Image (cartoon, rainbow, N blue to C red; front, top):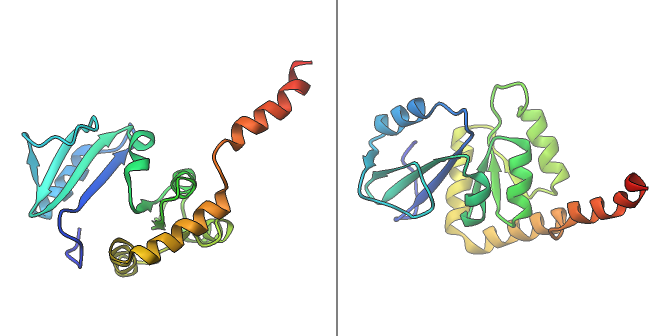
Length: 171
């Protein structure tokens, strides 16, 4: 993590996939000056809490569904997760990687499909600049929320789809 213009008392929720390499992530946190906290608890069923000055990183494996609604801004590098965050009305930034699925071209197409509700960041400098802007500028953040909500619509679409096809499948 690079120092940049972040608000004080920042809490970064880091929900990880079940097979994530936590040891590697913890080594990065140590490298950047975070210290594991044994007596700090956020009471969100976290696995560990790390602190550097007024900044916290809260780690939890398999916590995406439980934690997504707590976020003010989402950082995404997975297609479905990005859409879920946008659907919750959380403005998001995506950071494509070198992996086979979440590539730069995929992220750009997804942003277009989501009406710009997710902002693609081509490099770390752009990511940090846009993150700082979203965290500090409430009006800008709310505009991004409106875009995402409009594009994804109200919740409950899956249930409606199931209800509409069930009579055909069950008859």
